[in-house]
Image 1 (spheres, helix red, strand yellow):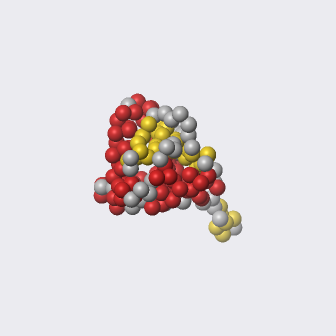
Image 2: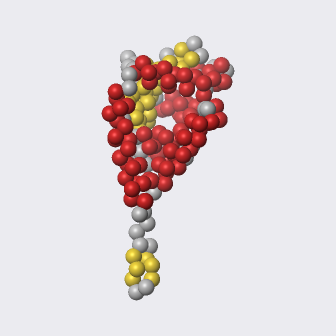
Image 3: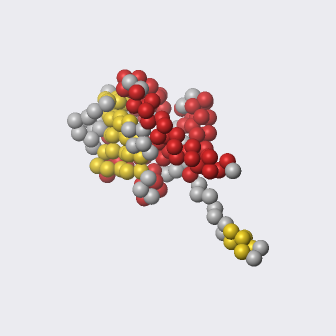
Length: 175
């Protein structure tokens, strides 16, 4: 009984979040995202592991929310912009897929081949970005954030599961 409601929530809530997400001023988005990303990737930034993103722009688009961020690296800091003159590589996906990737519940390659994640542009840079995502330690996030992320990812993953159709013929269950 709850499964249909669960599935409906997983599929409709991102669309409902689109309006408030678009109303959130970019300056606030930038401040929060910049702080989180620079904290999570602090060690890699200090060790020049983000040199590949210097003078390059990564576009991250959450398609169902209508949100775009452009990310680059400057002086060992990740910078977030609302626009970029040119985009070197882009990652585009719905909120649910991006939450699953962040929580390590889905592999970006799998979602790419299932056409649930679009990666366009410089292939080599895209691979380096994917490796960067794989390298970040969820434990670098505050404990409440990792707990919430894990809960959301589990909720999304369970809500995306197609219900099994079965019927009974002559007293036997057919799946």
